[in-house]
Image (tube, rainbow, N blue to C red; front, top):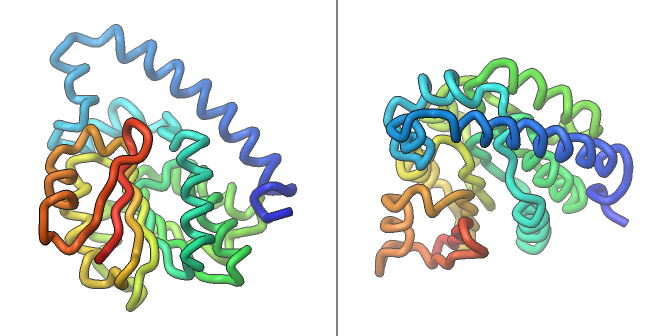
Length: 221
């Protein structure tokens, strides 16, 4: 038995995934009704990410897939992670998996970033309901600012799951603190070719491999 598979975490995750499925189904239906030019922005090439997210997806869960969430837990446990940074907390589904791994590892901290205030409030409430709040700090605001200060000296694992145009600049801010062997999981990486170019480039300091269809798993060499 693990923190992940026992209440209150397991029951909370069941509810959150059900809510995520509903909100994302409604989001996809609404997206298909948009003009082609607006639909193109959902492929990650929209530079005005704040307006885009607050206009279109402020109430959408945008959760990682269940399999990706399980992968996060497995990776965090296997490297005995204690310091984790998450870009794009949303309602906190992925955060719960990461925090559960930390608890089962014996402790640590997840630092998350989310600029939609209502999502920050909901995510914090979910951490409290799961009994994991003491392991999680969710910073409200633009990740380019919130993740540019007061970070651990050594970071073990990073999840990138926010605005795709920010994957490269966020990684640049975190890179100096990534320990050798640190892991980076980029969700929907297929929507950010610039990021893939950086981590897959020879002699980049990273070793990177695609996982499933849209997840890139990278190690700091």
